[in-house]
Length: 366
Ligand code: ASP
Image (cartoon, rainbow, N blue to C red; front, side, top):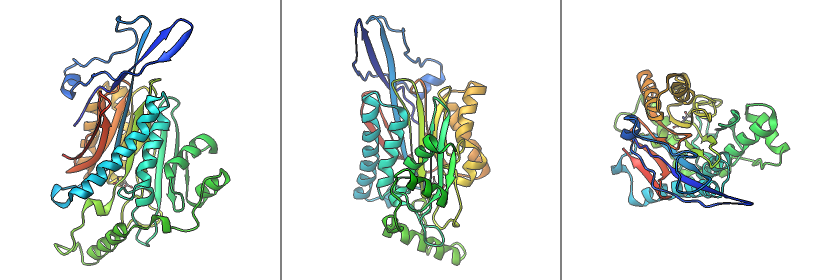
């Protein structure tokens, strides 16, 4: 599991003028340090080398799904494409954070990039249901206000994450699904596609045929090699902004061959998505049914809030709970100090974060 202290963003306050200089100091601390209590978050007033200096961190973590991802099945070209997709998402989010933008904007922007990328199971690259449709779920949560928005079973919206945000900000509700959600999108000027052609990708279509064939033959044995890549995936982002606000965003096409109308954990606030400035922001990925039953994202927060656990401990212990139920997957999380955690109990998880020097780190395998 990776864990770091993320960036220090120093705000220098001068008489009659205010300007922010963004310095990315090397504040990386290993997980072991935090666990041993030696990690120390640098906060307002702790340094005295500059008068009136506040130190603020920003942080960003993204994921593109967890599962069996083996090096042997990955071509160098494909790996480059996945990495580039994660980097594009981080660039979109990080540019916003560097400019002093909100964690909500950053998380949404990062997820939109991943939704537009056919490699990931969300938006453009969404998997197919058993009846050959694409049905997408997404959610956002603002850790400052505990406002949340979620959408489920969308069929004609290119960027479900942005509709989730609109639901949060304009609907007076938290969760909307299907036709009602799409009518709400239309009312608010969001493009509603006339059909589902945009979401067709040959690879996802073939995955559906493989999963169906394997099911028909009672598991398929060696005849059908079904990878987790074929079965599911999700994208997500968690961010910490200069104002100390946390946010989380998640978007998914769900699971290949799911029943029409099935909704997973991603749009369920507290299961696949959660953010609370008092604790952390979380976006999960994995076997949705288990993540819902284990209330994963809120549990990480609750263990920090009520048990005083560190982010690392809380994230791992919730993932262990999922494993005990029989589920697999992973999550990304960030706390207010900029600590991050990216645990997973599968052989891989597409993931990336911005290191303390502002460098993008992308990892796929264990
Ligand atoms: N959690 C998603 C779902 O069940 C799938 C995944 O993350 O792989 O819809």
